[in-house]
Length: 365
Image 1 (cartoon, rainbow, N blue to C red):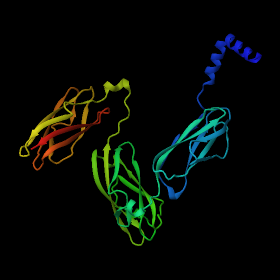
Image 2 (tube, rainbow, N blue to C red):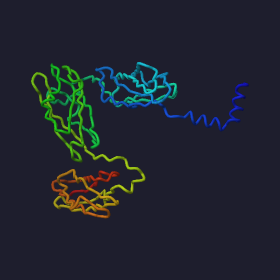
Image 3 (cartoon, helix red, strand yellow):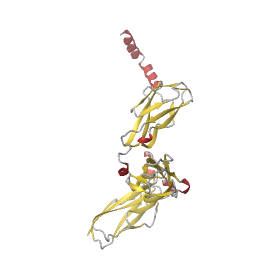
Image 4 (cartoon, rainbow, N blue to C red):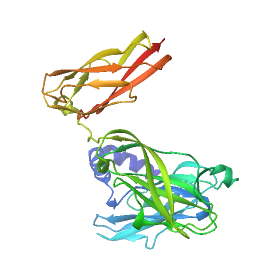
């Protein structure tokens, strides 16, 4: 009790001093992690554990001692060679993840506690579990030659021009022989690359295709429905065709709030147009006003419609500050009946709204 009273009295007497000491104690961690999140991609149960490493450097003057490492799942185990990092020394935390029978996205935490930071630095593992199906034939029922896939098309989703996107697609090798990719005769377009995981997939077993789509190499914007072809080696080459569904978007860096009014801004007079009741025998025309609402030049990269029945005319794709231009749209409803929706997408250099979509609604008689 005496010690407690003495400490309390000291706190009261030296309040300002203790505040200063506390402020000095709250310092940034001297540990610099190469990364704090690792993506394992798609992992399959039958191939066992997946291993990754987190590299770390001690940027401080004092030694850092790893006192404890905690994980939030028994499926994740950790190992490291040394528990002490000296000044400028680099160490590594090796993390093993054992795929589970539960399918879907996962995120696991690894907390590294040290003498410098008892609360710990948090590392993350993320990926997608693909459990082994009970019935392979019905699960991989879309056949492309001797390969079985789950779906007839592969949706790559949104791909941005700043970096390629990789999607992992599982398949089953129904052949009685192992297969591998024929990289010398792939036949793939320049914006698509494919790797097989593992490099050699045994007979009657599963593998992954790592499909990489490069939006910058595609050098176009909008939605694309593409057939891509490649070859696999086994006993005689076999051609494989896959259908890729992709929307390529131009990447723009985040705009600071202070610069919002200084970047190109495209104004669109209408984003939802109700044409009402129209006859299938009459072509409909509609005009949309596009305007430059900024002090910078606006460039319209591309205008796309989702149907050949919707045509457009745009006299200029460049708008100086204050300029306006008329986008004339012509809809031919012949051969159509009932409720109908059509879309027009406008791609521009407006970093806040790079893609503007106009929806046309109608009831065709």
